[in-house]
Image 1 (cartoon, rainbow, N blue to C red):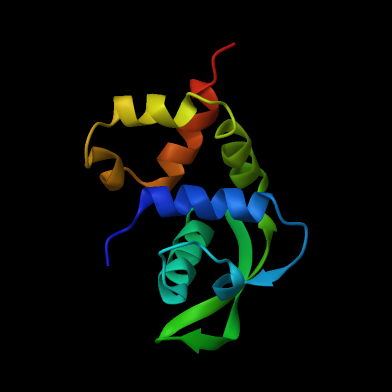
Image 2 (image 1 turned 30 degrees about the vertical axis):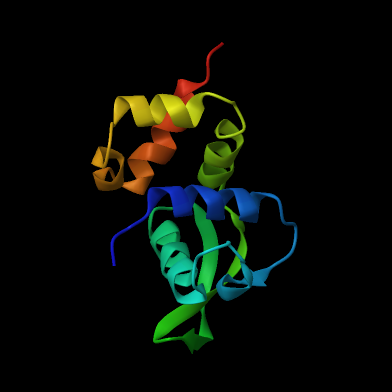
Length: 117
């Protein structure tokens, strides 16, 4: 499975809008199977964007994480994505499929710096 930066962005926004703990497979994203969302939550935990721990369950062989919240780093990333042009500017900086090859931590670090004053 390839990492999907758009999916990671959508997950970050979904978690940022919630104030309750949830299992990763409860994050419903249209067109995405629960195992893929759970896998991306795991990647985002590793990148320092999400505060979560592995739960006792699995979906299609993928650990289901118990999500507590975004980390401060993840919250800053989610907040920066509210600016209308930040994502477009990131896509301009990393055109085509290039953005898929950039580590999530790097993208999350650049996004707040892309906000125009």
